[in-house]
Image 1 (cartoon, rainbow, N blue to C red):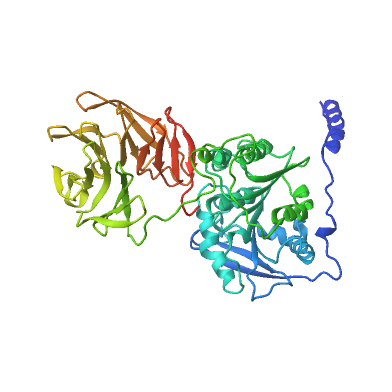
Image 2: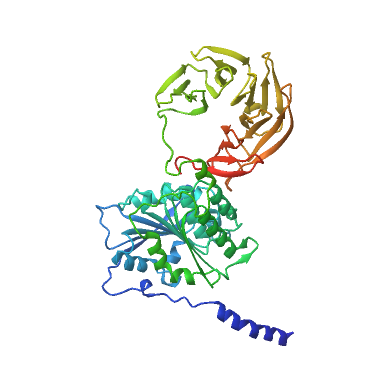
Amino acid sequence: MLRFTLLATLLLAPIALVAADDYPLGPDSQAHAGVPHGTLTKSSWTSKVFPGTTRDYWVYVPAQYDAAKPACVMVFQDGGGFVTEKGRWNAPIVFDNLINRHEMPVTIGIFINPGVLPALDAGHEQNRYNRSLEYDGLGDWYARFLMEEILPEVRKHYNLSKDPNDYAIAGSSSGAIAAFGVAWNRPDVFRRVLSCVGSYTDLRGGDIFPDLIRKTEPKPLRVFLQDGRNDLNIYAGSWYLANQRMNSALEFAGYDVTFTVGTEGHNNKQGSAILPDALRWLWRDYPQPIAASKGGPGQQHFVTDILDPASGWEVASSGHKFTEGPAVDRSGNVFFSDIPNNRIFKIATEGKVSVFKENSGGTNGLMFGPDGRLYGCQNGRRRIVAYSPDGAETVLAEDVDSNDLAVNRNGEVYFSDPPNKRVWFIDAKGEKRVVADKIFEFPNGVRLSPDQSLLLVNDTKNKWIWSFQVQPDGSLKNGEPFYRLETRDDSSVSGADGMTLDSVGYLYVATRLGIQICDQPGRVVGIINLPQA
């Protein structure tokens, strides 16, 4: 056995030597005489977003910083490793050199460590280490931490730009997926991402990122990826394959992305060696703004196929408290309710906003029927009503809780009852009855398929939309949790609410992630970004 082990060692050793490169640090990673040095200040922070956790962070301010001019910002996760000499990255020195040669703008660096919850009894109890929780997830906790705590604190002392084009974020390993996740969730703040040996694997659901990138309306991001062929291959997946999937997805969706591949494993050798080049690439052509893709080369992103990539969200009406239930009449006028203000508004085709109905009784969901009347869930008075074009009100049902409704070609009504977890039906005679019960957590949006053979009911508190077959008498049969929505890993709650369908059967659902588009087989094929994203 010993001879076999020795032979195997001798055989494998040359292969390892051939497979790995040395990756020495270049001159841009070393200090030079005559190059002005920035200052580096260390501080500590106790978080509220991650309650009780403490962490160190460092702020680098370049010598060229002028308080009268807003500075660019770059945030590094696992910050201590980027600023200490033993960490090899030498980021402050790289910043000095590149800023001095105008190869990147005047940039304040924020180098921040993950949080630790200190033990109450340091001698006998263990600390809780927050790194994976903060970095590996898909939710917006970490983005909120930066937006609500760290950036405002640094802004107290330095003039930081408020332009997202001036913000970059970086990290290695789990710090890399954290960097991408922050920019993905908040492209209104961060536009440039540096990712080295990124953990886009199933540590906390991060392996879904490539799929979300392919489905989601492109965001204004620029992404530098680096990985080695000998990176980790463990229970959570293959890091090298995961980074290839990320690159493929970003290319498919038309992002400004580059992928540098080396021979190393899960370490910072190659990443630190190419840091100067990565920063030059990220900040190239600055201050030219980074724009969202209009579709990848040779590919057509589903969302850009149905939306105009050159146009974004536009405010149609403002000054309301809580808007709900948009409905469109035959002429293209849009009606919606403002529940707290107890009004229904109308947006005319030319854009003029007016009050259609005062004292609306807390009307929520709205939909036009075949008779031209506006049907509404008047939940404040526990009624289902219909409004004629002049605003006259007819009561269709009383003593019911309701949220949303659908009206069939006969003027019959289905409506959801979230508190009691039911769906009701009002037939042509005006009689109401429960047609679905005890299968929902929170039934909300209700819509009929274009041919009215199926009734679709979403459930706000999970990822499913039920599909029922409509029977001749209006009853529902053969229900299944048919449509599967995408959710964030920090919650299985989709937040599904309003829905609509187009003429060919694609379903559009308002959710926490955005407006999700489902095909007829029940799969999410596209996600339209929320206005703030």
